[in-house]
Length: 78
Image (cartoon, rainbow, N blue to C red; front, top):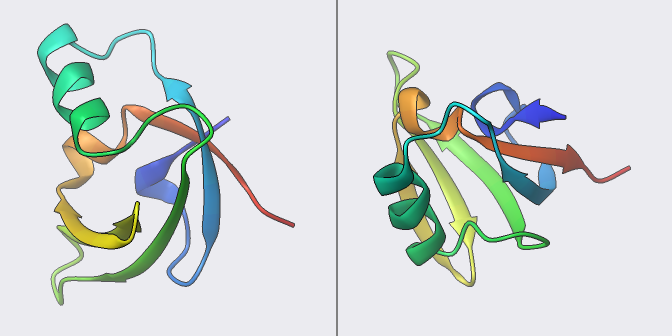
């Protein structure tokens, strides 16, 4: 599995779950934002300095720092 933070810009992925070291409060926050198992996510762009990145999930755009996005495990669409 690939961490969401490592996905290339312009990629579409499917959320697999969360890493084992993901704190419960972060897991709950990410899930409430739409990063749930089988959700489709597009990585749209990242800030000029590389962090945060903008993702499209459930039809809206959300900004996540790499320290949060690394907890989301995913599969890239082929």
